[in-house]
Structures are given as structure tokens and as C-alpha cells.
Length: 178
Image (cartoon, rainbow, N blue to C red; front, side, top):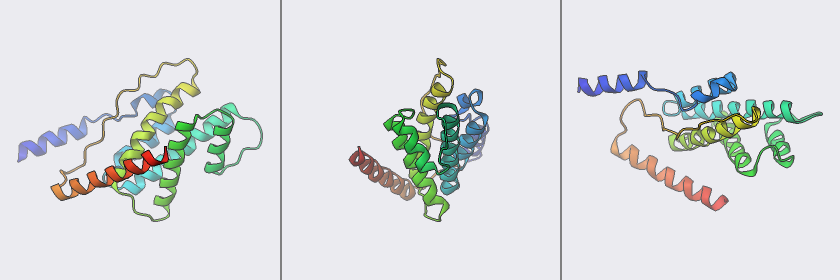
């Protein structure tokens, strides 16, 4: 039993974020991504809030770099404008809107299951690689595979089965959207 605890402790302390590559592109976005990753199991609503803020920070940076004129400060409108002007491709825009919607729901008190937060964290990882390539044209971002952060304590079998069922249902909803 102590061996399991010790092994888990070492894994947590040696854990490297999935978003380490962001540091050299945008420190604020990297910080928000890491915070979201830290909260995904312990506080999925906070994870969603941090991801939403991360997407907003990205959108503002893209807007300031690529668009002129009076741009709305509303994230939904900003993302729509970036997509209409061809700056954000549809796939990234859809993922960014999904994170925005789930982040808004979390901020306003809707419960956020861990599988939802994990799915959005995975999407944020993909968006982050794309974002780095856009803000520094010609840069070569080596986006490694996303490694889901481990929960702080092992899940019991019933909870794990519920999480898997939520994940399956959300995947079927996502497939129907596409």
C-alpha cells in the first residue's frame, strides 16, 4: 500500500503538462492551460473556466494581430468574426465555441462532469498547437500526443463506469454535430 502511494506521489510530482510547448509562444495562455489541467479532476468547473479564459486570451491575441477596427469584446462575436474572416478555420472555431459554451455554463453554476472537462482539455491541446503556428508564422510546433492527467486518487469501479458512459454519450453528441 505504501508503495502505491509513493509511486503515485512521484508520478504527480514529475508530471509535465501537456501544454509545455506554449511557454515560448504565449506565457499567459500556457499558464491558463496548466491551471485547467491541474483542476480537471478536482474541480472540473474551474477547469472549464480556465479553458474559457484561455480561448478568450487566444482570440484577443489573434484579433490584435490579424484584424483592424472596432472588434467586439464578446467572445462569441469575436470568434464568429475571426471565423468569417478566415483567420480561424471551422474545426478550431467549433472547438473554441464548445469550450466557450461549457465554460460559460460552468461559471453560471451548471455542473461539469470530469469527462466533459477532459474532452475540452484535449480539444484545447489541439487548438493550442494550431494557435502557436498562427501567431508565429513558419514556426514548427511539435505537438505531442495528449496524455490525460491522472486523477489524484483511484476511481472506484462504479464511478469509472459512469465516467465512461458520460464520455460515450458526449462522443455520440459530438458525432451528430459534425
